[in-house]
Image (cartoon, rainbow, N blue to C red):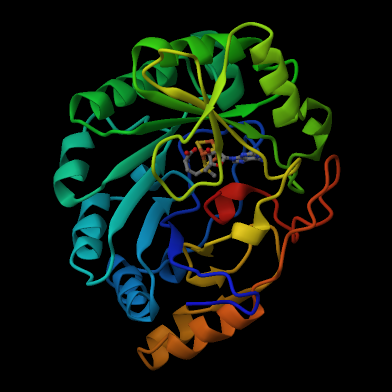
Amino acid sequence: MKDQFGRGIDYLRISVTDKCNLRCTYCMPVEGLPWIPRAELLSYEEVAEVVRQMAALGLRRVRLTGGEPLVRRDLPDLVRQLREVEGIEEISLSTNAILLDGVADELRDAGVDRLNISLDTLRRERFAELARRPERSFDATMAGIAAAERVGFHPLKINVVVMRGVNDDELADFAARTRDRPWHVRFIELMPTEGNLFLSDRYVSADELIGRLRALTALVPVQGPRGNGPATYFEIPGAQGTVGVITPLSHNYCSKCNRMRLTADGRLRTCLFGTHEVDLKRPLRETGDVGAAVREALAGKPERHFLRIGTAGGSGGLSALSQVGG
Ligand code: SAM
Ligand code: SF4
């Protein structure tokens, strides 16, 4: 699949639910959002059918995300169905790991190749403030990470959204974790949505945070783990893992964009921060064929996003990344 700017599109992020068991301050309001009605959600069979038809057009890799994908029942069933799709080479999962401990081995056996785990703080009390859930959620997340390591998910990417005055005093602590374990810690710039503009002064650019880390420890540029991501990686000399930065604002990577997003109710979104989307559910339910809709989406994929710091301008009216899978 090629878009009008010649970019090859072979990666689909699939949101399986817009619901979540956390309420991260930068992502979702504490009362939650108006959830997608159940009847509007694509069934696992429908998701697999979309992937099958897109794989015939060139899709090669998928990531399951949300909301929190593990709050949707029987997720390994979907993984097993996706594993059967000819042409799909890699299945990965983004999760907050709260529910991972009980299903890590089943997910691996079902066919998940790689995991990205979100963890914004290494401190129990702070986790409760940030995720607006009891401190035991932190214990559950750490148990989930331990389970991922135990059942052999490697490389394990740990995603940290960095916020000034909230968790930017933990950069060195996160980096230190990469010394003796093969964690790939990726610091993500806070992205503005309509729902989190009150956090605008929390933004820390990747250049600033790498500068701050360099003042504390040696860092050398490295290739980083394999994957689809746009991160830039560094390593503390001799460390088992790496430290990466993801810079959607300070250095956008739109020219290398290889992806589209499928929302839980079946809309194919061509840019995380854009208004362009094409409904796949209707043609899927009416005719069984989404080929034309996928081609229409590809043709309309915008060249880049126009997100700016401190304003939701360019976010395409998005109130939370949980609505489109981040
Ligand atoms: N619940 C799962 C999780 O947290 O990993 C998957 C969905 S979450 C929306 C996907 C990623 O988006 C997470 O790494 C999260 O930290 C990130 N994210 C959400 N809102 C964000 C924002 N406003 N700026 C930067 N990253 C954000
Ligand atoms: Fe849930 Fe992930 Fe959003 Fe946090 S970032 S509220 S874990 S969807």
